[in-house]
Picture 1 (cartoon, one colour):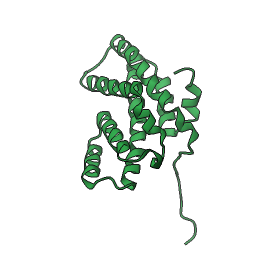
Picture 2 (cartoon, helix red, strand yellow):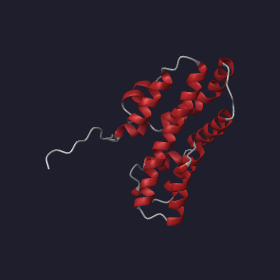
Picture 3 (tube, helix red, strand yellow):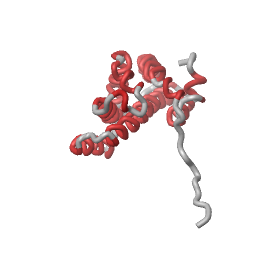
Picture 4 (cartoon, helix red, strand yellow):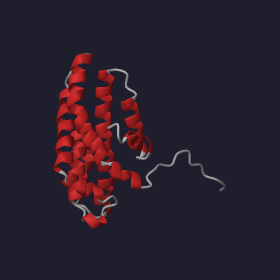
Length: 172
């Protein structure tokens, strides 16, 4: 991810860029592995939120919306990925807020990398404590998938995405 590091750090929406900065600043393999998992989940979660909102705005069936909302009660990266895949499938490509997400989900390499991240995350969740050596080996396997996920969302730099903070009501 070195070639696009400055793009990931400065040009992508803050939920991803901040997570990327934390990932890069990790001072041990264990910390870097944990932060890699959080970065991957952040990418999937952000795309899921956009796609869920699109499907909701475009009239997705009520039972499906309820299922997606239930997935958000105790969210896992696997549930976020499922919501992403299902919600994108409910909206016509030309009506998506961020149409590139459909292309991303049509890319078998990106989907396979996301699936492997989910599976690895499930394995990590059940590990009590990894040694630096174990984490380094797991990180070797994860870095390539994280690179695919991160490079896949570089299109987000073309969007003016942000958030409002500290908004105060003026006057009466």
